[in-house]
Amino acid sequence: MDFRKIGVVGAGTMGNGISQAFAVAGFDVVMTDVAQAQLERANTAISASLDRLVKKDKMSAGEKAQALARIRASTELAAVRDCELVLEAATENLELKLKIFRQLDELAAPQAVIASNTSSISITRLAAATKHPERVIGMHFFNPVPVMALIELIRGLQTSPETYGAVEALAKRIGKSPVQVKNSPGFVVNRLLCPMINEAVFALAEGLASAEQIDEAMKLGANHPIGPLALADLIGLDVELAVMQVLYEGFKDPKYRPAPLLAEMVEAGYLGRKTKRGFFSYA
Ligand code: NAD
Image (cartoon, rainbow, N blue to C red; front, side, top):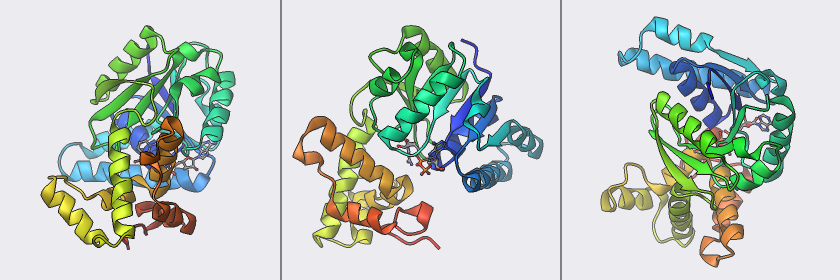
């Protein structure tokens, strides 16, 4: 499997970071989204992120221009037709992802790899929606993508050793550190991280301490670089809620019940940094 052109479906928080990572590593990228405004926002975010690298002398202005020129944006899913790997990074919703996987199965070349950046949905289930489930894999990046080294590589039951090996090599080519994980609700990092954040929301709702105090306590007491509530704002409260629902439904264990305050914040549209308001405010 020779990867040269990468398709990214969904240009939100993750999709734009993923597009940047591939473009900087020299791959041609087709970045698609249903919303033109999201594509424009993604282009602006990528440009600003590369500007920071230029300022820190980690990249020249010429390299920035080359990386940007490798990214083509489109509102048409069909634009990923000739990509050797298509990475789905759309909204965390099972029905939506199944629909996108069925569409990609029709569109993409039979030898193309179809990957998902899902935080919690079963790769085995997404793979089963395609005619080539052995070419489906989870590539779970972390936020912010240009900074975070890890990619959890999730093997569905059907993922072939060839697909796994090729994608592992690809992950290394873009400078990331892959860790192999079996398909299971929340994989490894979110299985541990999201219940901790959820518990912080329970603590806040119970009045145990203020949001600032909870975060300060975890930074100073557990040596975390960022507090759990600020981290929830960074991840997106809708994404955090969706992961807790998948853990709750996947294991049928009440320890994973989503905090009611988390659900209510999402109902209010307070999703964290991306809406400028979550547990904290962002001007
Ligand atoms: P986001 O809400 O920022 O972006 C999702 C994007 O998908 C939006 O731009 C939306 O317009 C687009 N979209 C919706 N339907 C689409 C369709 N049919 N075709 C193309 N685009 C479509 O969400 P995000 O935080 O970037 O999350 C994307 C995925 O990455 C989710 O599966 C999430 O679980 C996963 N993820 C998120 C994080 C995180 O920290 N935010 C980390 C790792 C993985």
